[in-house]
Amino acid sequence: MRFVALVASLLAFTASSAVAQTPSRSLEQRLAAMAAENPGEFGIAALDLATGEMVSFNGNEAFPMASTMKIAVAAAYLAEVDAGRRSLDETIAGQSALRLMDVMIVRSDNRATDLLMNTLGGPAAIDRWLRTHNLSGIRVDRTIAQLLSDRRDLRDVRDSSTPTAMLGLLKLIDSGPALRPESRSLLLDMMRRCATGSNRIRGILPAGATVEHKTGTLNNYTGDVGYLITPEGRRIAVAFFARYGENRPAVIATAARKIYDAFTSHPQRNATSTVNRVFGPTPAVPASR
Image (cartoon, rainbow, N blue to C red; front, side):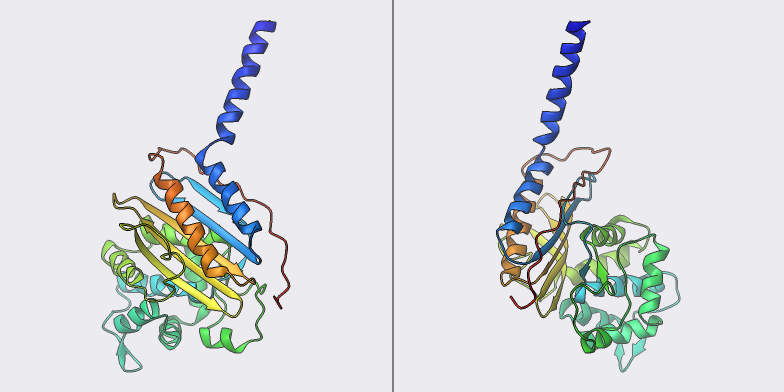
């Protein structure tokens, strides 16, 4: 019996050691260390869309979405097109819906966003679309014009998302039932051509990496969300939110490179469950910094 107990103990120790040394665990520790070394508050999450492997830092902390919410506006409008209730050729304020969507995603045009959103029924319609697809931890409450005119509060729960909730939206767009293939391809092409935030996700990725993304910016806030694609076609959904501090774009660029390198340094595994260890929040930094 003692021998059996000893063997069982050794096996348990070996298993726990293996878990502690997984690439996901190591990556989360490096992301946590990087965040601790920089002033500000950071929310980071990444999901291998093929295996379901996930890593996060402050993954369940709410952050402003800013213009990253424009992905939801585009998806909600395209879903209406797929259902036959709207058309990309529809004229809105003298421009086609397709043109408005393109400048909304590629150039982050705020007026185009509000025109499309109001055509759908306002912020409440976008929020209902999110709920219809069982997405929680993400919400749309105001038009862009309302958001920018309101008193700024980077802890306001309105128009916010957690990093992991944003991954849920990205996964829904990439491989969920929300969009038909042609609408999905159209949106991803616009995100691939995104012309803003070249110093964030795209900042220091290696040659051959492709990025489909949407940025968000407010005073003292920087965000970037989307997909990292390897030359072999491996797709990784990522969400980066940062408030306060002075080094936000560089932190996002560095985190994106760490995630890209970590996910591409080991072969894809057929994961049966996601890895989602969420570290505690970083110390708060005063807004005046």
